[in-house]
Length: 526
Image (cartoon, rainbow, N blue to C red; front, side, top):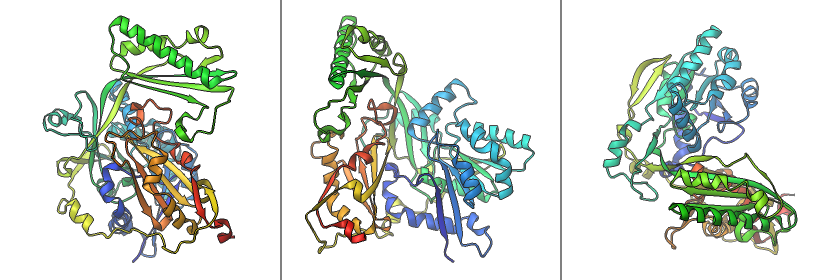
């Protein structure tokens, strides 16, 4: 008996995870096996041959309009919410440090769930969300209180066990290193969370949960099959501050750049006088001058409006307090035209960097709670190894046809494909989807990993000159390519000083690349 899985929502929830790259090529087959063997499928009427899953959130702060759209128009079996990223986990960790009742995303409880509980209950739609963040039990308790007041009978399950902060001292002495950079385990740790997979969620549904709340888990585990289990941690690495200032008038970009450079010179002189070290890192970017495009910027900037983006990093908070105080004086003491400091005096915040390492799945104890009571400790199947699992699946590597016609035409990538980009730690990925299947072979031929690496070389940070930082993956079923760019975000998340720390513009920037020496492709589909 075959099954069809429908994923509905504003964005695809299946995102690339650097921690799970070994299983990427097997993900779709794995997810189908997971769905076909889960209790959700078994509970469906015999004549039903599909599972419909709607994704109502792709990040904390996503639109609330998606919930009623999917609830009333999606004909759903499951409604899922994905809220977490490394940045979000950092924010929730800080919130929990202020109050033991915080650390989860309140929007899920009060905006996404509370207004629709009655209709969810009537329709039988089951909900899965990682809204628990760093405090899933508190999230469940808040939701259970609202359910109780509504007089409904709905079971709320919690998947816990991702929080490994109590093991940080053991990690420090075990010789663990970052899986990408090889750096030793950090001294100052704020949080340690494992990326849990889909099986504990499936088990909670087996136990009859109407709503499943998790802490940190792999994004795709909310709807897809099991993934390698990995560990993510954040650690304190100094402080950062960012000044954003609008500049107007002739040669605005030039004046903005010289103003920022003057602020840096002045504050560095102050540091020297006070015996403070220099900045650990500085990022100066003029928005409006296409600085982020590097060598691909369009000619000389003649804009009469620009924005200074000046981010700095220092080991000592005291130094950045000096920096923050020296921004406003530039309005009267430096180049004319500085019109506003966006957000007021720059705020100083700790730099929390992600640190990834592999940790044995068998050593992570996963607990399942139902309505506040501990039900069981989930035990995963560890009878196979990753190598054995991978070797059982034949990778699909499509080849470009040798007789693919050439021609005198050139196209911007935007004419032939859609793009979307995002992040994971200090790694970005760019998805390229052909606008028509006939375009796909030409995209494969033109967009090699080397071509994309050369295009973004001004944003890549190579520790070794010969190191290849871009990898291409082919997705022939969707006529798409996925490019993974390591060390491309200046540290990524809140550790980055860039204006685009998550690579959200990378896909749009790639749209300008030219696909040359091709036939009249537009006529092929007319």
